[in-house]
Length: 615
Ligand code: FEO
Ligand code: CA
Ligand code: CA
Ligand code: CA
Image 1 (cartoon, rainbow, N blue to C red):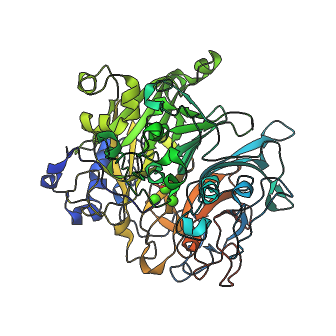
Image 2 (spheres, rainbow, N blue to C red):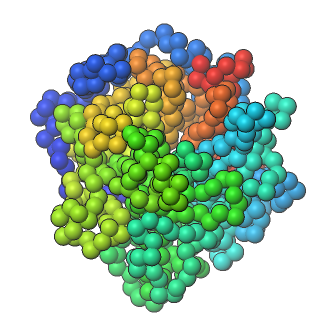
C-alpha cells in the first residue's frame, strides 16, 4: 500500500542528523560513494567483490540473467509484459471459488459477490504468499502442486463494493470477507497451473476466530468491556514461512479500518493510538458505522485495536487450526517476516514497520527452534525482539525491547505493554527512523536485503537514508554478527532507485524482495515509475549491481508477492489493485473490453525453455 502514509513518529529520533557533515552529499550517494566505503567494511567477506560498483553498474554481462529485459516502451498499458524468453499465465483472480462449483465472481460490473459468497472465494488485494509443496512419490517436495497461502491485503470500497462507502452491515461484511488470507490448493495440470478442490482450502478473514499466544496473550490490553471474542486478521501485507511448515501473515495498515462515530463518546486519540496512526475517519472503509468493533469511540470496544498489528501463524495443511497471533514478535505495521535459521538453530525473523520514519525489527527465538518444538513450545512465543539503529560508520546495533532495560521499565509496566506499543519502545531506545521499511529477504552468504520504498517527507538525510527527500527509495543490505543472532551488524546501501533513472534499468519504489542462492535479487515495485512504466519485477545481480526488467504489470497496479517452486522453474507474483479497480484503465486478467472489473490475481511466470526463473 503506498497511500495513507502519514508521519506518526514524533519521537524526534534523529541520531544520524549530523551525517550530512560526513560528506554523504546527494552526488556522492548517487555515484556510489557509500558503496565504496562499505567495501572495506565487509571485506574480506564474500560481499567485497564488486560491491563498490553496485550503485552505478551500467553494463550487460551478467551470466545470472540471460533474458532480454522488457523495454520501457513495452512496459506500459493494460496488459502485463514479460521478457521475450518467458511466458505467463494467470491464477486465482479475486472471486475464484474456494472449491470447484462454488460461487464465482468474474468481474461483472453490474454486480458484486454477496458477503456470504465472498467468504467462499479468493479475496482481493493479493500480496505476500508462499507455496507449500506437497510431497511427491519419492517423498520430495513436489514441483507440480501444493498449498498456496496468500494474503489479501486490501480492496477499496469502490473496487469491492462498487461504491465509496458501505450502506449496510452486508456491505461491511463483504468488504471484511474480501480481506484476510486464503489457503488454496494449486496444481500443474498438463502445463497449466490451476486452483483445485481440497479439504485444506480455507478463507481466513476479518471475522474468523483467532487465538493469541506469547507474552501479550491474557493481558488486559487485549480485553474489551464487551467481552467479544478475538476475531480476524486485516491488511495482510507480506508474510513469511517457517522451517516447520507454517505460514506467517503480517498485519500492516490495520489502523485504517478503525474510525470514530462519536455517538457514545467523543473520541480523542491516546498517545498510543496516535503513535499507531488511528484517526476519526480511518482510510474511509466506514466499517465503524455498522460494526461497533471498529468504532474507536465506543467504550465497550476499547482495546479492540490492540488485537491487530501482529504476525499471525497459519497451518496451510490444517483447515481446523485456529490462526495464532504471535505477540512476542511485537505490534507495529508489519510489512513482512523473513525467517532464517540462525546460530544454534535459533529462528530469526527480519521485519519492517512500513511507515515514514519507522523502524526495522528482528525477532530471535530463545532457543533452538527444533528443541522448542520438541518441548511443545512455539519458537515464535519465546524470544527477543530488537529494533535497529543504523550508525553513520556503516555499523549498526540491534536494541532489545525488554522490560529489563531501565529506560523501558520507566515507561512500561510489563513486557506485554512493550510489545503492544513496540513503536514507542523503539522511540525510547533511539532506533533509526527509516524511509518506510518494506520487505526483507536473506540472500546467499547471510546477507539481508531490506527495501526502503520512499519518503517524500524526509528533510534531513542520514547515512542509511541518504536522500532528503527520498522520492523513489533505496535498498540496504547488511550482515548480522553470530549468524543472524548477534546484536551488531555491518550495512551498506545496495542501490538507490534514483540512480537508475534516465536509463533502460529505471525503477522506483522498491517493495517486495526475494533473493535466490545464486546471487540474484528480485525487486518488486509499488509506486509511480518513470517514463510511464507500469510497476515491475526487476532482477539484480547482487555482485555487479546489474539490473534487468523481467516483468511489468498493468496500468495502476502494484507488483507484489513472490513464491517459487522448489526447482525454481516457476515463479508466482501478484498484480494488486490492477487499474485501481477502474475498468477504463485495464480489465486484467480479462482481455481489454473497457467494462469488466479488473481483478487482483497471481501471475505464473516461467522460462519457455524450462530453465530457472531469473536466468
Ligand atoms: Fe503493504 Fe508496505 O506494503
Ligand atoms: Ca508499498
Ligand atoms: Ca499494496
Ligand atoms: Ca508492500
